[in-house]
Amino acid sequence: MYGEDMDDEEQRLTTREAAERLGVKPETVYAYVSRGQLSSRRDPTGRGSTFDAREVDALVRRGRREPSTGGDALQIRTGVTLIDRDRYYFRGVDATELARRFHYEEIADWLWTDTLRTGVRFTAPAEALAAARRAVGALPAHSGPTDRLRVAAIAASVADPLRFDLSRDAVLATARTLIPTLVDALPAAGPPRDGDGLLARRLWSRLTAREAGEPGVRALDMALSLLIDHDLAASTLAVRVAASARAHPYAVVSAGLGVLEGPLHGAASGLAHRMLTDVLERGSAAAVVADHLRAGRRVPGLGHRLYPGRDPRAEALFTVLAELPGAGPVLAAAREVEATTARHVTLHANVDLALAALSVTAGMPAEAGETVFAVARTAGWIAHAIEEYGERPLRMRPSGRYNGPRPPRDLP
Image (tube, rainbow, N blue to C red):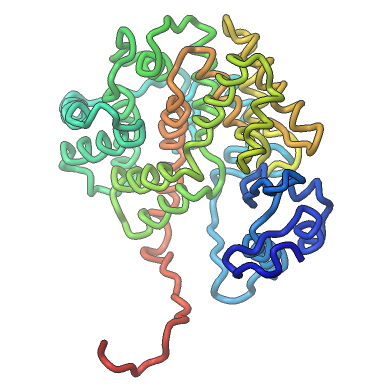
């Protein structure tokens, strides 16, 4: 075996050996790399890629693990989102169709109440917004978007003496004011659009100095609507745990934002943004894709473990982006990345690549997609919190399975 004489910590496998150990074709090994399930490194001899044997074995164990029938399985009942056969649904309604027909605020409010109110708009309370802006303004200039949103949420909570009221009406009132407070507290990139207007238009002015225009607002509103929820992602699970402990809605959203800041959840669109910019500058997706693979990195914005086929969120967003002035070259670059990678393994564009296409086209910074994701997902987190407030408190208290030294031991 390759690396047979090396220390276990450095044992590397060839592509063929990794494929045999996993029981798959070599092409599938590279699909695992593209999806972030394996990391690769170029063979020093230049004859291909090598893989960490421990990572491969861990993937084998995950694949062989039988579903638990005991108390270790954590299944959470939810009526918010269903993902099924390359489609996803909010409360049984096709989410992409909702995004095409209604605005973000309308969909969010309907998700919370099961009553559609067309024309509903969210407004930030003056006192909470002032507190949030002061807190955000005190942050260092290099602060990231999630830093600003977390600080804004905490400041707004301190300004709300009724935050511990978890009655349904109180939580709904908080939700309708917290989201616009998060948006309006962000520093403006261009002439700020505040007040009671469409949330997407106000967020646009925080992300780019360019004039929005109706196509731009429509594209951003579509992105927000599509990203409201996506079943029990890591941040949503954190939200459910916080709500189970009866944390107030501001703290619940803060829990979600804390997880979202991890590099494996909220930052993928920024990586895709930089990749698309590189493709446009160099004029070739092939060279950029090759650089990613040569460095052992996955190609960002491709593949999704919940969608064997196409990500419906990406397809819906690409459709409206086609109407955005200047989007043509960016969309062509995104499709070229997808086509180039497909020569080796078929991985379709996911919503992170579509978000990146929006941010590049609109002259937004690479972190803009993370901001859009966080603002959008806040509505879904609130929907899950409302569900969890109706469950038995502290029900998400799993028992640890201790695997340390057996007592008694001498004092150290």
